[in-house]
Image (cartoon, rainbow, N blue to C red; front, side, top):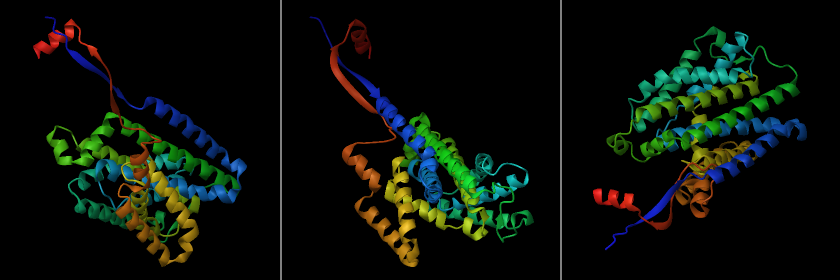
Length: 350
């Protein structure tokens, strides 16, 4: 009697077709945004610079907390170092706009040794530890006379024409947010992304299964610091300097990052972008309310946490299975086929 076994053919789908379509649409949007200064008035595009660096801040914090499980309330350390790094490089003759990338690399390198100290802490101790690191960074910066000695400072060498200055700042901010989002996307589609998600779900279990948790977490820590530093440099360039170290090193930046990620959807690429857009709009129309503005932000954050625990985009994605940045995979089982002689031998051998 012939023994024919049936095996189910299957393949792993990484949403390649969806990724290509999304890539084309996103590229078109970026091109439109690049041409916006030629179409829209300067008063509009100059305001968008803030939206761009808010997206950077939210995306990098989400990379830390949403994928590596590290809750930081001290990202203002790297924002401040990025802003003051512009002064250092500007005094050395480096163009202010080019300094955004240079400062990101330098501060990322500084964050590497800091990670060895921060990773000795866990949970709430890690969060408080990052806050302490931010305060120590501020105390170091205000000791240097060339950085203003705590009085703030302005950029000495930058484009004088306000029109060209806003144009260059706009394009620099747009280019940087594209780099940050693209880096996040390709990182999460790689093997490192799968490792990060396992660490986020249960670091102890992942380590017990043989996953090397320190290396990917350290990579994310450095990338998040570099992104925050670039955002700090853009903030400095747009404002033509820093009014006070207390402002650029303010913990409010971390609070706003957490708010944007929570309402948008933690653990997604799209969520922080949506959260940044919502916060950006609220800041324009409600910031004049003073303390009531902060109350509204707090009430909204509590409501989203209670009724949409996965955030706005998390709820949309869970209901309609849509994604602009597909990073997951699915196993597709196709029609069953009869196993040939080799398969039968393999099956009997097993």
